[in-house]
Figure 1 (cartoon, helix red, strand yellow):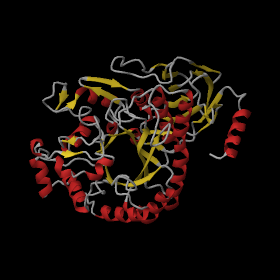
Figure 2 (spheres, one colour):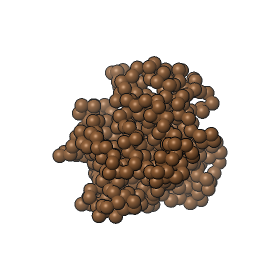
Figure 3 (cartoon, rainbow, N blue to C red):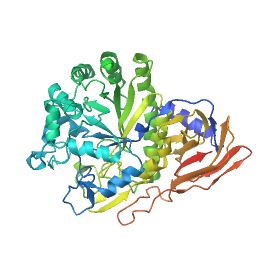
Figure 4 (spheres, rainbow, N blue to C red):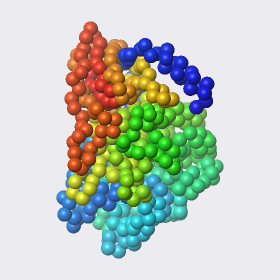
Length: 510
C-alpha cells in the first residue's frame, strides 16, 4: 500500500475515532440473491491425516466406524449438514489416476504422494470410498479431474464410470460393488492449472479447458456442472482469458485465496501471536472482498445473466506447520482468530451471493483451517467448526441488503472495520445476521433497525474468549464453544446489543 493510501486510511480512522458504536439497517423488503448452501462446502485432499486417520480408518479398525468411515467424524459433519465436498485435491488431483483407486483394495497399487510429505499413498480411499462417503453425509460430490498429467480419455472414462447406467464401464462399476450410478453434481476441469496443475499460461489453459470439457459427456438427462480451474488472488488476467476464450465450455470457475499473516516462506505461527499479527491476518482476509468484486466484474462482462458460478473452492488460513509435525502434512492449530477468519469470509460470500455460489474451506479434517482434529480414537471440534454450526441457518436463505456504519479498528499500520455483518432471511421468514467484532480489546455497541419489519423476539449464539489464540486441544476439547447470546434487547422497534471484543455472534430475529 502506498504512503498516500496509508495516510488517507489513518485520516479516515482518526475522523471516525469518536464513533464508538455501530448501526446496522436491514432492508427487509428488498430481497437479494439466494445464498447457496454450497458456500459452506468442504475440501478433502489426500494430504497428511486429512483422509487416512481423519475420515477413513478401514473396516478392521478398533476405532468405531461405519464401513471404514469414522463414526465420530461422520456424526459431527452430519450435524452441520455439509452440503458439498471437493476431492481428491488440490495438487494431489493433478497426478491422480482414478483407476488406481478402484477394485479390490488389496490389489490397488501403492504410490508416493509427491506433493505432500513424500509418504506412501495406499489408494485404499478411492472413487467408491469417496462417493459413498458423500452419500453417507448427504453431501454433493465435487470431483476434481486430472488435467495435470492425465488425458482427456482418462477423465472422460472416469465421468462415465461414475454416471453411466449401462455399458462396459457401468459393468465394471457394478463388478466393483456399485450397481447404480452416482450423482455427480460437480466435476473439476483440473486444479490450479497456473501452478501445480501444469504451470500453464492463461491462454494455453483456456485451450486445454476447452479440449477436456469436450469429452465430459454424462448420460442424457444427467447434469454435471463443469468447474474450470480459475485464478489465484488478484490474477485478473487469468479470469479475463478464461472467460473470453473458454466460458462456453464450463459452468463455473474456481478462485483460490488463502489468508497468510506473513508470506509463503514464513507464514507465521498459528498461536502465540501478538495483536499486530491478529490485525494483519484479519486485514489480509478482507482483501478477498476486492478480489471477488473485480473477478465478478470480469465475469459479468462475458456473462451478464450470471449463468456461471464463481466458486471459492480453496480458502482459509495458512500458517507455519505445527512444531514437530511433517511439514508436508500442513498441520496447524485452530484458534479464535480462525473463527473470525471464517465469519469474515462467510459474510463476504453472502455479500457477493449474486456471483459466489460455492466455497470449499481448506480443509475438512486435520489440514490447514480444519473443521475437526483427530488423533487415534479422539476427536476435537475446532472454533472454525463452531462458526459453521452457528451459520447453518444461512444455507439456501435469501440475502437482504443492509447499510452498516462501523467504527474502525487499527493496530500499527493495519486498519479495518471493527464490525463485519451479513443479513439474510430464511425460508420461514426469520431474519438472521452474522456479526464479527474484529477489535480484540473493545466491546462494540450496536443498534439494528429493520426497515419494513418490527422485531418481536431475539435469540442468538456467541463464540468468544479472553485470549486471541484461545483454542481446543485433545486435553481440553471444549475450551472454546458457542454459548447462547443474551446481550441484546428490543427497544422502541430497534435491537440494541453489545458485541464483546473478538467475538462472532449470529442472531435470529422474529
